[in-house]
Image (cartoon, rainbow, N blue to C red):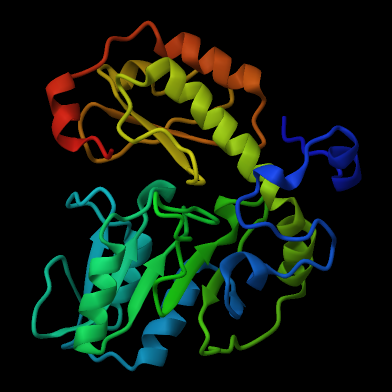
Length: 295
């Protein structure tokens, strides 16, 4: 059941915004720019925002966009790769034809090469783009907010808020959308003031999973991150593909990995039931974890 308390009730119950690392004011006039740190334009989707950005940068068919991810695996979301490929080439290595660097903060976990990539982009005088679709209001170990290093940042509203659609392109250089979407304007005003509470519950749900499966966890313990997924190494994916509760499991292309969406609107009992179901299965190769774990 999706349930979130009205803001006044949250305050009455003592759930203060102290948890919120870079606070916004808890009122209906809070602006999204206070959270992402710059001006922004709202689009129909994250893909639409990427398309508008690539066109704005005037990249040609022979230009390359370097795509790099937190996990550094061969997999890149088609939401990014297919959209970029409509306009230019994509690459996983830096070449003389690289005209932009596109960082994907996988599942809300920060890319560890932010500063280095910023230096490379500055040296080459090319834009640095951060995909924060899964990393809304996430911070790395140095307290740097994801989206604050790049020249441009992409966000996906449905991945953090209970909103049907919507993408955000953040930059100090305004890229205009063709039309104003009143639904998104209204939803942003409604949900941004509640972000601190949504983030708190998401981290609590993530920590619940991490405490139980810390030895099997693909990712590190979330502290300042706003995680979208909890990943663990586990055999028998097909046997656990359909659980007996409402929490979905997400398949990846990597064998023996299970990813569980961390939903702020799922009841704790749903995760407790999920934990009970998963606990009956043994972890897969722990030696793989030692090589791939993002710590």
